[in-house]
Length: 359
Picture 1 (cartoon, rainbow, N blue to C red):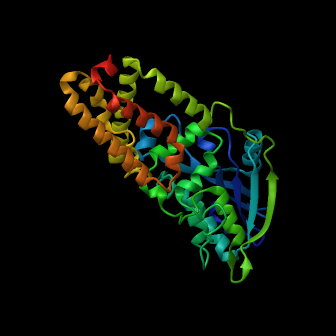
Picture 2: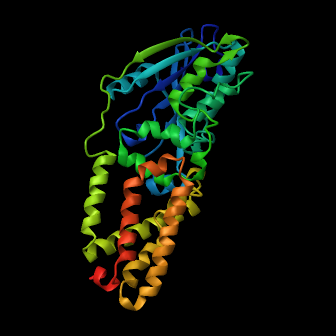
């Protein structure tokens, strides 16, 4: 078996794409793509997987956010690979590609080349370089025309495409949308998610012949995830409403403003230092404006003029946030928080005596 990597594939060899459905863990939120090479004459049945990473990596989360976390490729036995996904109750679909012998051989050689030590690792990117795009590039490299991109589920912005996978998890959906910047509001031009790639393969033809010769459902997920009562915009809205009333307490109010300002500094830092283009140019900073930090320190009558000016600037910042996100899911998802911030500023601005409000 060790020498098979140096041998050309036999005429009975098949190349197929395995698309795995979503799971319950955050890292499995969007599904997974792998590529299978089967050659019964040589005893080969491998699944090459570009989505591997090591949780034990030093400063794992820091590197992930910064954008220099290394993913790597490896292969597994086909049966073992499928069993693992069935155990996790994740759907698995297989599409056998109708390729010429030379196309199959080219993919086979590239897969084995990627296993060499100097080629195994790559820097992960949310949209441009992940387990799906690596396989898309591999397949496109042997086709005369690339896999169809304009397919169901991939015809809107990147933000909309990704948000569909987060619908049953409101707080994750909110957090991811607040973290994503301007790039995610561009129309999707890549097959960066597994199901979209599967749909693209199904609609692609090569010289008038369908690229996919056979599609097999290897396993269908039994349990459909449901949205829990607390993980909804309605529950978050109730929490924000309670917070509005609680803000008559100076400790609650000041803590709220400081947290908003610190979040603003966090998003500025991430957008400035991260290598992820998806996190850059993020207008969320107009919602979590760092200037909020100054409010608790300008709460006395002595700073009333400065405070009124600051409130006006922060209100303008909120208006700018709304204007920039009128057509974005970000605005709808963050609406409870936006209204809470708006009400807190209006209450502060309209108070007859700032001193009384701050008491």
